[in-house]
Amino acid sequence: MATFVIDGLVFPNRTPSPGLLEFKKVIEPVVMNGADGSLVIENHYDFVTTAHLIFRWTLESEGEPVADGLLAVPPVGAGQRHEVALPKLPRTDAESWLTVQAVLVADEPWAAAGHEVAWTQVQVRRRDPPEPTPTGRRPQLRSDHIVFGPGVFDAARGELRRLGGLEVSGPRLDLWRAPTDNDRGGEHPRRGLVARQWPAPAAAPDH
Image (tube, rainbow, N blue to C red; front, side, top):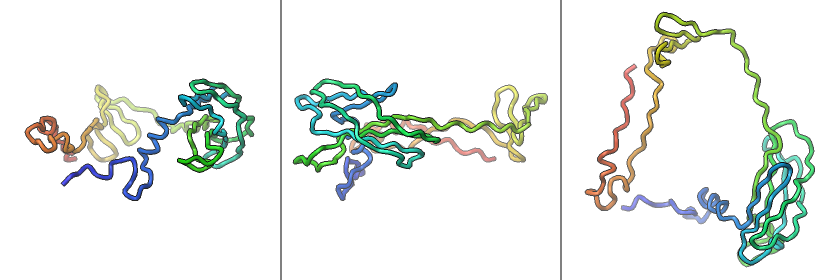
């Protein structure tokens, strides 16, 4: 029985998968990039201008819409680029993003008016990082280990040896995934050299 199922760009009920949305972004015919208060619009169509599109924007603060409008963009010729100023935006007090969408002006044989053809996002305000809160604790160096709060670290290697009253080993990097049919050789198991060389997952420590 085949195990490679439901891995296409649409699900069995024909709803888009995340892969299809990513593919749409990769091949979008209009590419927009924001920098220094302006938006550069590149027309990757081979023959048509961007006259069949309107460019609308939405400002969101912490994911909540704050303002929206339209960008005045003249038709950009095929293979050409044009730079426009970003709209004047209201001030926000939290992390904020400006989303610009290129959507269809009118119905087309393949999509209705308002269908999104391309989009981009520009961060207009960053989230201020929280001020660190001093704990008042300082690492204490002993003969062969360092004590910091509930943790005891090896002074030479920096490894965690004890956490609270529990002895531990590590942490250490442990990466592994289950072999796939391709790793096993698929319909030709004798070719499954990768799976035969695949390391087994590391055993968990006893303590």
